[in-house]
Each structure stands twice: as structure tokens, then as C-alpha cells.
Length: 427
Image (tube, rainbow, N blue to C red):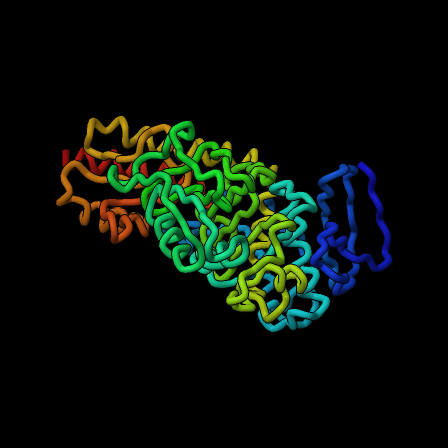
């Protein structure tokens, strides 16, 4: 590892992105560069002030007695240490004399925040300089339109795999801006499966293949990804509900998008990771706020971004790195999911998960009761035990436990103990 340390002012390298015309700010930093011909993660320590700052608490999953276990699908639970750090910096961010919520998005303080957030995300996912990272607004739902508007012409064919409600919504929105075709749908089986990739009949003339990597409502998750057979070789994924929950080979995708409010921050931020050669070809009718080229050229600062949300995402990225990165995070997520699914499967049918075992989500666990009339009691009694937001999505009913990165193991263990006690009372 080659390391350069200097008290002088440095510029954050712009990762060879042809759409970033010039650096936009300077800030005092310590930069570590690892020699790699394609990927140069950058670790940046923001130092907005020379005043001594209190040391951060150890980055461990804990749970305070005055907080509930929140199983909501999004907005979702955040790491406690991240919340406490944000609390400590809320009034006066690192001696700057102002809150992040008060900062100019073009001031040096916020520029250091957004640049470090991008750098840490690049490190987490090993995102090469061939991709731009954009922090946008509008949620993943806005990307249902932005993706076809930027990536194809209105008469281009596009393939969609529909594995649940969100990929279905993406397909329907795409009908306005391209010629989409559903090459597989799990609707007839109530969205409980992922197709065999060998059986997919892809259109070789399709501009791209679109998937939803994890269906939040139905609890099905791609464990690996299809290879697009289209002439362009472009795979696009909505990763909103499993973003940064495990390692992903970004190079297999032309574009990844994700709402932040499940695994990496509060609602209001949408992350787009897009290959640079796909930028700059937006359809003429594309609104300026949906044009990736505009946002890439302006470093996600074309207009005022969701500053505080980006700051919170940055704290979460730091936390994930301090846990050991996404390999370690995935191990924790697998352990939590295994405990919960085992409790369901070993209940002799009292609890049931409809999803095919091989594609069960590590993030969103839907389940029902054999005696459906007890579901209301289950949810109410769980809430009395400080376990909330277990009601299933209104479109499918039943229950759903979302166990994202920030859900501690203790939360899952408490839920499983409650499930067993509930079964003993009502079986």
C-alpha cells in the first residue's frame, strides 16, 4: 500500500469520469491510495476544524432498552451508533459552528461530506473509475422512468424479469418510454420464485435486461444474476432492499439503483451507480432532473441535494467499513435469516413462509399463520413486547419481518422466542 500524508490541501480525485469536467472544491484531508490499475479506493478523514473531537464509540451492534426492535420495510431501523454520532454532531458539526442541515451544499464542509460518502461507498462495493456514483432524489420509483429515458430510445426493445410488485411497477413505467417485454413473470405463482436463467427467452435486440434484486414485499431475492444475452450486454438492477447487504460484483451491471431508506440511510436519498459509457444519451424529452449526464457533470450537486440524508448515508458507510466490509456484514445477515427461517420451518406449519427456500430473502421475511384469524393478535402482542412494524404489506397481508443490516441479532432472537411462546399459547 502506498500512502501519502500531508497537511496540505488535496483534491479528491475524480476517478477518470469523463463527465466530471473539473474538481469543485478543496479540503484538508489524509488520503490513502492502494495501487490498483482499475480500482483506487480512497479513505478520507474530514478535518473541518483543528479542535479536538470526542472519539467515536466502538462500531458494534447494540440495542438500548428504551428503543423498540423496528422490523419496518423502510424507512427502517438505523445503527444505534450512527444515530448517536449524528445526535452528537447535530447542533455543531465538527466545530464548524453549524448543523449539516444548515450548510450550503457548495460549501467546503458539505463538499467534504459528500465526497467522503462517495469514496467510502466505492471502497465498500469496489466500484471502479468506469462508473459514476450519483446521490439523487425521488426514490427508486423515479428511476423506473429515469432508466429507460437515459439508456434507450423510445422504440428500443427492453427485457424485464418480473419477480414481484416492484419489478412489475418498473415494467409498467417503462412502457411510457420504450418497448418493454416481460420475459418471465412469477405472478401466477404469487411471486414466490426466481426463474431458471437457462429458461429465459431473452431478446437479442433488447437494449437492456432489468431485474429487481430483492423484492421487498414478496421476499424473493436473486442469489446470483442472469447474464444478459442482448447485443449490448447491459444488466440493470433495482437493489433498493438489499443494497450493501452483501458483496456485489458491480462490473456485471450497467446500472444499479437503490433507495437508501432500507439499508444505508434515511428516506430521501437514491443512489445510482452507472457505467460512464451509458451516460449522455438521454431521450430529448428527459427532464433535466432525470438526466444522468447533468448530475454526473455536477457531482450530484446540480441543485440542492438531500444534504442531511447524504450525511447519514456517509455515517452508515463508515459503520459498514468498520464492521469489516460487506463480507462480514453478509455473514451477520445470513445468521439472522437462518435463525428466523428455521423457527418458521420448525413450527410444524403453525408459521409458514410461502417463498421457495432457495430464493428466500435475507432482508425481508414474509410469513403467515396457519390460523389467519390470530394474525392481528400476533402483531398487537408483539408490539407490547417492543417489536413493531411486523404487519405484512397491504397487498399481500400476513406478517413480514424486515431484518436489514442494522437489525441486531438480539432483535431476531427476541422475535423467535416470542413466536415460539405465541405458538405454545395458541397451537
